Image (cartoon, rainbow, N blue to C red; front, side, top):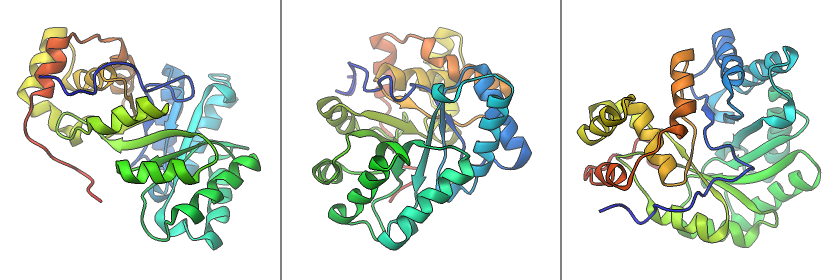
Length: 272
């Protein structure tokens, strides 16, 4: 039986449904990947302070802008504040530094990466609100939150909660998070959608992929899109970038979705 998270799309116009995950991209080669992705049609770039590559992502973005491949207002640039920078004395400077490394006037989507360290909802979320009020940040998101933590976030954040980024793939499903997003009007963004490459060895995913004449990677992304999640897969070659981007065009039927849903094993790649 399918998980009860099938149905309406949680992603909206603010968060493009398929973005580029950039963890691990580095140097000139990494910025080339970003430029190529934008040239192919990506309009959603996802990075984080802890990745250490905001400047790499920014360089790739600005190369695409300089070449006229994309307009700045077409691209959602997202980054995440790491737990070490949630202290009120460090938060604002860290956001300013991220903005400078990315080379943008405004960070389109700023996530709270993990609810750890100095995280305290009544203290932390006003810091995000102040960045929105001052034009440093356009939208606010959270990452790796539980349902209770999401409720706390909504209670203490004046700005709308735009997105919740969480691990989500055929081996790790959290349908309650998707239902909460539909109820409260924010986007669920799935990271590690290929389960660290494990989808290539999952017979149900392989079978669905063969039925649609696509790769297991594409089948996994299509499965997530069928559930209404936005997705930020990583890729470096133009071929994989292209196939991941167009995975949203692959339409799975209910039987396809149910077949992948029936996988009983559970593997969380990035536990708290």
